[in-house]
Length: 332
Ligand code: NAD
Image (cartoon, rainbow, N blue to C red; front, side, top):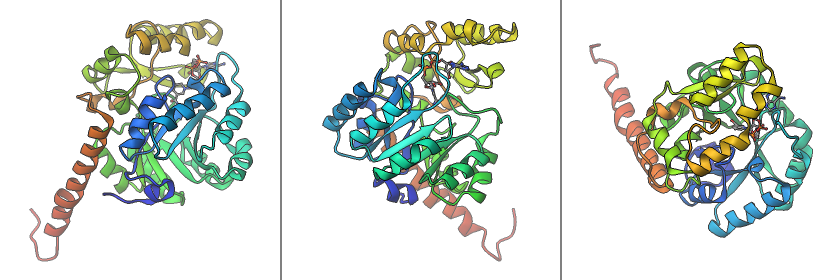
């Protein structure tokens, strides 16, 4: 058992979070994560309307009585989305944990806080973390350059980003981006965080509601198998490096804008990948952590394994090293 400020704040057994993933964060996965003692998130925008989100929350509650949250990502979309409606749906459903991402959460905080909701804000820089802390969020999820989806534009990997953030941010912090195993969890704790977030790792689980081909592609891929698209629009997104991603990068080099690139990078096409397993049909998010993923376990098996291995690393490997380096022991 590893207790941290994260497990205390959200009433979960393990300091592990399943990040909000477009088209993947549905009730099947979120409930499986919650039942295994970690913190799962439904992805609000995966539901076509706020009303559909209310139904998805109810569906998830039928599958688990453990705490879970809802992710709301506020980034440019090809079709405008009613963010206020999703916030009302979240509050109306009695959800008490929300992960905001992509933009300043300040406009939504008064409503969420008045409803007793705890807010995790996911961001990609120290300065945005500080500003979210000042605005009153309860927890920061700090997303390094390794991550799937939107890593921001600063390109700072987590070995520097997390301790730099931990030096100044006082509220609990979740390490996100590049995490997939026990070594990552121990590293996250050592770097000053209270837990870790995994996205791609949870895509390659039995309960992830996506096609088997996608899961197998993640297992077969390595840390070099991603591509960064939409850099030229300052809305960088790390995705699986398939032919569609390469075409998008080419179009950006040709100076094309969102009007031309939008149709090929559209989430609607990515959704078809997850549903049919046709890996070249569209863009789908995946992180560099693919280099660490070698199987497709059930969520409980994955989470239990990570916690048991993390405890062994802390108690045996690290504690052993600290014990051996006491005074009087000659340096090797
Ligand atoms: P979508 O189909 O609306 O857009 C596809 C991609 O184009 C997205 O990355 C989007 O941010 C980008 N985009 C759209 N309009 C843009 C514009 N005017 N300028 C620059 N970029 C633009 O998106 P979707 O796949 O249906 O996803 C819905 C939302 O979830 C989007 O905001 C998307 O960015 C977000 N998302 C987040 C993550 C994450 O890492 N948190 C992963 C996948 C999707």
